[in-house]
Image (tube, rainbow, N blue to C red; front, top):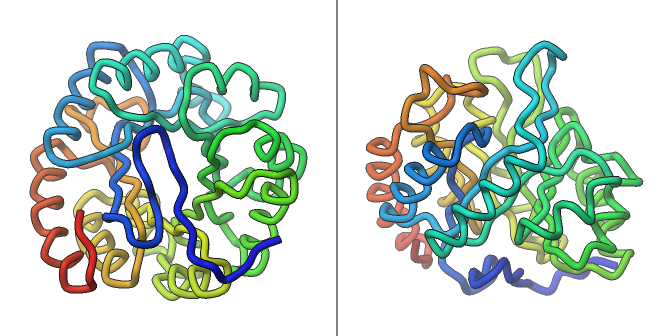
Length: 264
């Protein structure tokens, strides 16, 4: 069961949570090629990212959209992580793939569409891997916390919560970002909470502002999509930062982190 004790979660060599620097997880929405992934990994690490992200099995709204490279993508992600000494995280969409994922990734990501997939939550709880749990598209904070409880009750306390905005009447952004949820979840559970400004914004030009707001609200990390050529990305190009913009964001984030008693 959850308590209000502040926690840290170890992801490979990186600690996320209370008393730790703000950890940035960055990389492409989807793994597309080894060469492209290596280039992005090199650039985001140079800018200060600690963990590499990349989607391999993609849950898409349309069945005709790119669905990911599957296990081949996991192999590429694992290889890039080793090459650049970065732990890696990727979204898992089925409990049947737990054994496959645990061979390649340092942390399992459960996406918004699967936040209340109880079978997947329980399997992730038994996996022995840290779990990054995104808030569901229309989930209340209580429902999000209860989803974390399913994982923790399987004996896995290493849960990192991810605020990525919720679906509301507002259509100026892809989702409505909720900075208050960061503070509430940290206060009620003690779990680390990170923010996903890319999915909240849906527009790369808004990612910086949301990132800085999240850090100011107490986020323990950021999950940011970065792509060398967003116009050619196979998914979510419109919300992906180019490496230069990512580097600029990291520079602006450092004084904001210091203002709230953190480092990047």
